[in-house]
Length: 205
Image (tube, rainbow, N blue to C red; front, side):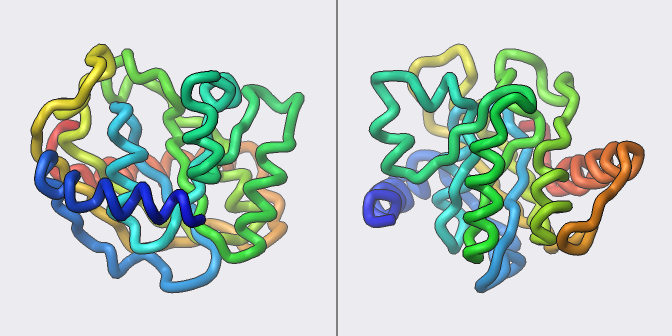
């Protein structure tokens, strides 16, 4: 993770100045062992702010088509992101995420997906994060991001100065490892996860 560490080291002081990033609840991140960091997603700035605020390296899940973008693929590879194809026809990315959790790593995920041009709260959260939790037994660390959409609107090519807050909530576990929740339990889990994330947002993102 040398490249990841270098990027974080360079961005963190600049981000604290340019975006006035405020970090709350960082002690809620488990010091060791697997964890799934799950946050709301309204801006290209979200993974940058979340990754720099987290006390441990985060391996973000990223859409396969974004990962394969020729101009930026080198960056995503260097940051050890995990590409995931849409649908269930190609589970390779999810298997890679499970292997990372088994090694005690931190996985970052945005349950709402990547429809950034839509209004916040308009997208329905997906169950992928819940399936990872069910298969691994890893706890969730919910995160509320605020101010990122104003600092870097989806339509803008470059970010502008702003005030960004990254608030980590208390970790929680929905199921033990290899528990097989039914469809209704998964739907309820999605609602519970997103409710915790929304409660951590101090203001509209």
